[in-house]
Image (cartoon, rainbow, N blue to C red; front, side, top):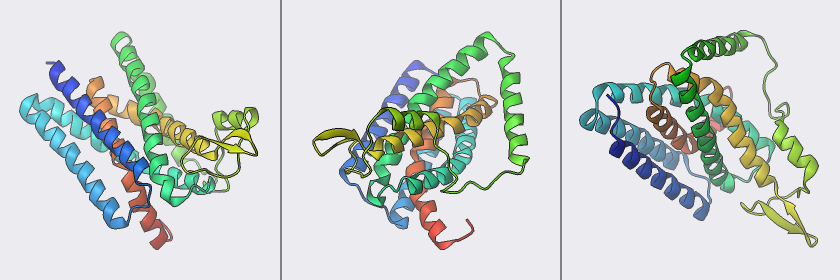
Length: 256
């Protein structure tokens, strides 16, 4: 049994509208959410994912609903390490707190676009080459072994920029100051890129690197590209507010 086309199109349309509304809200009201506000939004997005799974259970198929819940929980739990890296990136780039919402939102949108491409490629490979699952499994084992190896602690000072960011720094004029959430600014009559563009790219590309282990993991739970993508959407939609919730806890709990 396949998921009905009307359900897939309707769900993706509604989710895109929610993302668009969230993006507009983040840019129109730049502010640092309080722990109470962040907690309320996290509760909302978690409830939305559970409601979506319930609707799928009632209207479509119990098996697909179970796969979605399992996939969403997997992606959400694996996204937690993204947040700590985001905290390091935003601290190193000295992004003003009031603009961090919009930065995270754009980074999440970039990540979703890149993940969608990755998911489509993965589904195509799996359909034509079943042995790709063995490569996914070997990759996950390699990542697990890497986690067991002793390594230097990742700190704000030790966080390295990726190749895309280094290339932009070399090829384009870059201002040293932020100009709100703008990507370009005029300095002494000359147009320059602002650090905000580098932050957007850092968040988006870093999240894609994390997807290299989380997406193969969810393909072990389901072979539906729709479920893989929607599970990723719901996992990433709650990340922005969870970032501020965790950020507030980090200020209070030194060893977190």
